[in-house]
Each structure stands twice: as C-alpha cells, then as structure tokens.
Length: 64
Image (cartoon, rainbow, N blue to C red; front, top):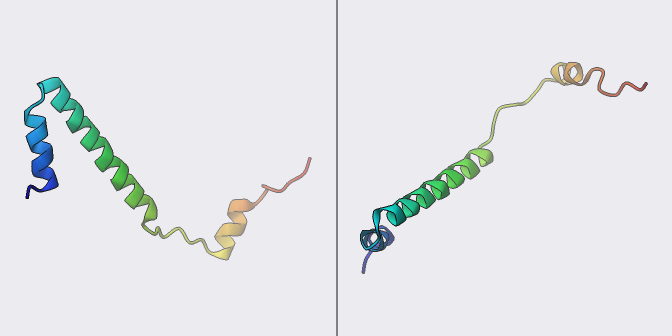
C-alpha cells in the first residue's frame, strides 16, 4: 500500500510541469493555512496588569 505522499508523487509525475506546479502551489497554500491556524491557537502572554489596562483604556469612554 502506498503512502499519501507516494500517491501524490505518482500522480504529479504524470502531469505536465505547469499542472504539477499548481499542485505544489496548492500544497504550499494548505501548509501555510495549517501553520497559521496553529499559531492562532497558541497562547500568548498578553496579560496586562490592572494599571496597564486602566491606562490603555483611558479616554475611550469620553462623551462629547
């Protein structure tokens, strides 16, 4: 039984270079999309202290 990578390789070998390049571009797109989704799930240390929060919001509720 062939792996997925081997199956894709077998198919790509039968294509003209411009079509094989489309497959490569699509694979790169999928990889980038996956990496970006993983990055957005990673926790970031953006915790603000109470004082930093108050100062960051200062003036944002002013009425005219």
